[in-house]
Image 1 (cartoon, rainbow, N blue to C red):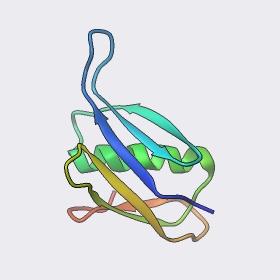
Image 2: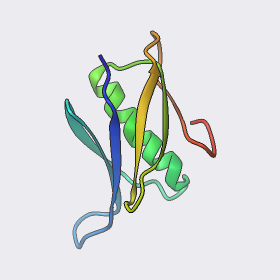
Image 3: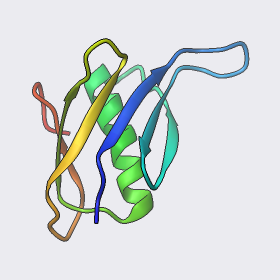
Length: 92
C-alpha cells in the first residue's frame, strides 16, 4: 500500500546546499535542490525518490500546501510500473 507523500523545501546552511525532504509514514529521503528545475519539479522528484525507495508505483497527483514551502502527493492509481508524478502546472 502506498502512502501520502509530503515534501518540504530546506534552505541552504553553512555546510549544505538547498534540498527537498520527502516524508511518508514509512520514512523519508532528502535530495539536493536542482536549480535547473522548477520548484514543482524539484518537489515531484523528491517524492519520486521516496516512492522508488519503497517500490511504490502508479500515478501520483500533488499540489502546494497552504502556509508552507511544500507539496503533498497522493497515489490515485497503484498500477504496476514506474511512478508518475503530476502537478497542476506540469507532468514530470
